[in-house]
Image (cartoon, rainbow, N blue to C red):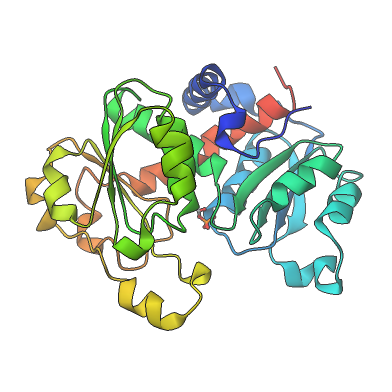
Length: 304
Ligand code: CP
């Protein structure tokens, strides 16, 4: 039985295979409409979500399966003090696969130790978000045609932004990838990601405060929201929240084929005036998220 807790639980070949399956699903959705008939997906979301939970549910329904679950800890027995370990033991009796989001880093890993069915990490605190990364990789493949030879600018809250941590891990496996890490000093990428991924693998990267200086070099601009819910005090959040706001004016120096990604939700960091720019991929990215999750559910359930 396989779980997906960290994007690096998957080999590069497996990730490439999931991308190929997702592309096939997009082309021939009818081929997949009965693949998970009789299977149930449990969505255990202890933290708010729109895209991840609904795309998992939509993915399972489009595979002919069904879903159950909760969308906040308050409506589950976690509110009475039930542990994650006990909850997954119970849910293992009702469902075939679990997608779990939790505010505590490592909670899905704990769940995987007690579950008798596959567990997917749907985001754990400021740590990781592997299925967002699968979504991002499919988006990059669709928009740029390759995952190699790209200069990727990650901009915003690189400290608490779990999607960036997983993306850096995954993209570091592809050839000739370079990162430009754009953030205020207080929100730089964690030392663990820098030393354990970037330095260890000899990946080329620079850290800067200036989006404007980085812009002309970028093939991908990955914007992120400043993660209010992870801050210890409101004053720091208010001071940092508008550090970067992407506008049409700032895009004047960007490459004509640069792809703008954002895991969403967006607050202020991309002006709505950018939405009509053909380089803005973030709503197409949402759509890709459903198809890659369909591919992942099939893989973990060992559906051929
Ligand atoms: N990208 C993402 O994880 O969005 P949600 O928080 O809405 O699931």
